Length: 606
Image 1: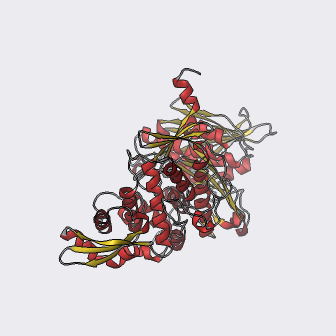
Image 2 (image 1 turned 30 degrees about the vertical axis):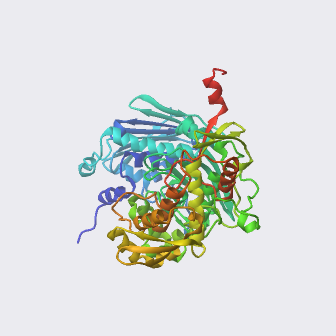
Image 3 (image 1 turned 90 degrees about the horizontal axis):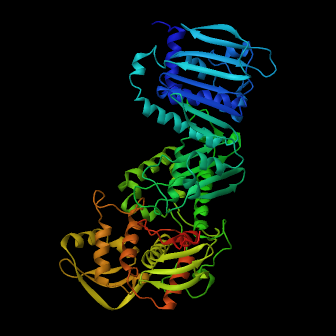
């Protein structure tokens, strides 16, 4: 057995910290931010493989500190073990510069404010060489050339420069979002790539980094629970992406890729967005330093919370309430006065159905297994949460308002109703323009929420049929009903076998009592025995909810149905009485706003 030499130890350790050029940029920019820089300039050549240069106007270092910075586990940010419980800086391990220097050619220039001259250091053959640098400006500059040149096995696994650049700019975007008070200049291969001036408002930086259009499509998130605070922005449900790469999560100002936060945020959108679509979000979580452990990952991408349940709950509720404001439809920016639930208030419920916000997480959902298993994306999110706290994921599965939550700020039933368009859309006049309500998706959402609420509260209410109906089924469907007969009762059906492949239907869900019993039973059979590898169900719904989505869709008033004025009003009141969602369970919008500015533009008034 041989003891490894220090150079080989450094190169092995560098594998934990320096994965690719973006890792180098991350470490150097974090050092600049910790040094109090107000301006940072990053220059990248060849995707960072050829050269990375980071300059800042931070506090700089004297010769002693500069030399120590190139030694392993030397840091100015920790003094004793207790400091690990209150880390407020980006870096603290003392590994970044020596790890980078062990796999590249590194030069460092630094000068403290007020010093007559600075110092230049470079690493040659594992040795630090010092020489004076009187001409440099206060601050620090680090040049990293020929990354992994000394470790060819690592270098050959790097991607093309364009791919490496994409990773670099992704992290720089996160750093810029975390620190809007810092000016960033970014150059790529000698040309200006991005300039992000310092700003006072976070939304201004979001508009600069992501785009003005994306910023305008976001609603404000602002929530608190105890010493925890959540702020930021998340996209409207009518604006979504094909991937989850636009989720920017921060804990105490540190960019993270935390699975718990990710799950809590995506859980809110699970049956709001179409299958395979994802929101954009820039979310900042601030917690007391002692409530989070940032020392669980060498690159500091992951964190661990002392109370993951409280964090999950805060993020889920904060994002949900931001969507419930309906601000993008012209409503108030925050939650308004609570909307009384007709059933709980003791008043007559709308003719569209009864029920209220129910509890999610009832053990009966386990009868058909865990819901997200049919959706690989959603399954992964649940697995992520399960690694941290399975109970948190199950207890926080509620998408919409619980008892005592604030109601939406905009009430559709309070707006001026101008009637139907093509017997499909209800026309409402809002403060900022025209709102179109799709009567089918709106009614579908109402039925779905009522059915789901009753299911969670103990079982769907039944309505006995005046004359029992005999329904003949396909043998496959009959077998499905036989297999899940007990569950069919909980779903609101009273069935009795009648010969081969036939059932007598004596009762159906009360909310669907005006529907054809035969069609309801066929739809139940199809939904209750759905093949996980078959046609997709609404994104993220568990099997029971998917059944309700199917039943609600086929039972809702259709496009082309003429509604009396009283029915139109009743539908709007029903939408206001349920926890707000801007889409039906399949992801189609309930309401589409047409801004007055757009109408005026069409008439050339602007």
